[in-house]
Length: 293
Image (tube, rainbow, N blue to C red):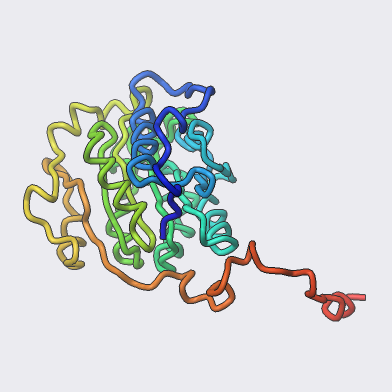
């Protein structure tokens, strides 16, 4: 469900704030910010009924730079906040923006349960495979052997596979984009915004300061589009197989999509109207409070 403007959608200029980002030169966050605004324009979302929720990280400042409502929460806790917003008022368009450390590290448990609940959210993860805000430590998606300030001898762990995890746990729209592919990323995020259910869009994002491995040149040599090889996003087994591909060839695009009832659709309390619009003047909780006297 999308709440659109009555006539035409907003323009990019109308969504642009006076405050300017202070990200590093060459950071993929600039492209992701631009694409988010373009996707809001394309899908004609009503800014007055749109909330962008973020956690802590370089890219989590994104909602400072788009004229919608926004909530910047605690590190790793963007999805619980977004869940509360959706349940309180399911007429709102809720977009979540986090980094890979924020979303797959400290927020990994929330990611799993948001996927299995199939909440109607658009979740964009800025995946630069490193902790940028805290000066370059290994993140959950850093490749094994990646050398950083926290792993000078190389990372010991296998990286998290966000797409395979999302598919396994029940997300109904699972995609991967590339920050420097503006048309391709805009298509994925726009489709995710129009999807009824949890749309997970993992976005490869170059970090020009702390990740000297996964550079634009590195991505250019490896990425290919699923649509160009005839991938069927309704095939869950094939989607899971494609999510395992890594190395000389790495796929981007829509991996998996299915139609399934959302979590909100199963809540009888909000079928007639959102919680935020319900009259509570005649609700008497004195009997409950008296139990604690």
